[in-house]
Image 1 (cartoon, rainbow, N blue to C red):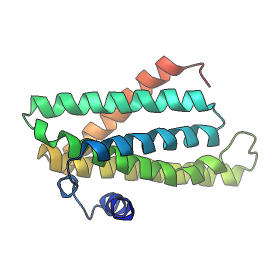
Image 2 (cartoon, helix red, strand yellow; image 1 turned 180 degrees about the horizontal axis):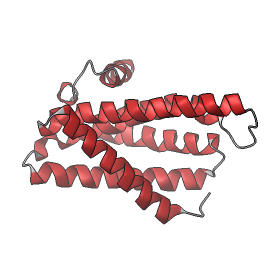
Image 3 (cartoon, rainbow, N blue to C red; image 1 turned 60 degrees about the vertical axis):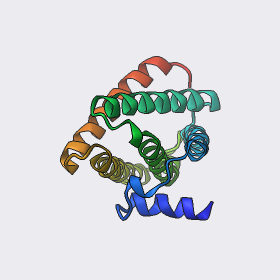
Length: 172
């Protein structure tokens, strides 16, 4: 288990590539479970319900897997699905765990202006880092430039935020 965690840390530091990860359905399943748990933990930390966190995370995972499958199919690179999906979900889960700090600093009921400012800056940094990591993974999976991967990552994040926010509004 420790080598897999080390791989995701190295991937998030842009030192590894998705093709360095074995293509394994079992590993993808394990990463999906970790992503679901991480999403629920983030939701609880942010003051939302466990069910809201589970619903939002599950929808986000399904949307990511569907969009990735479609993109790889359109570019005739379907054999890269397992490695790319596992890499994207694993990196996102790891960054989500790191995001517990700024989310916790900005928890409901926090009045300290400086603390909220720090939380916002930390969270913004994590968003930029997340886009960079996703761009790095997509660059290798789709054989595109880093800037193109970043554009795809930002577009997906916006689409995901709008769709999932619209579908789960009121479940907190």
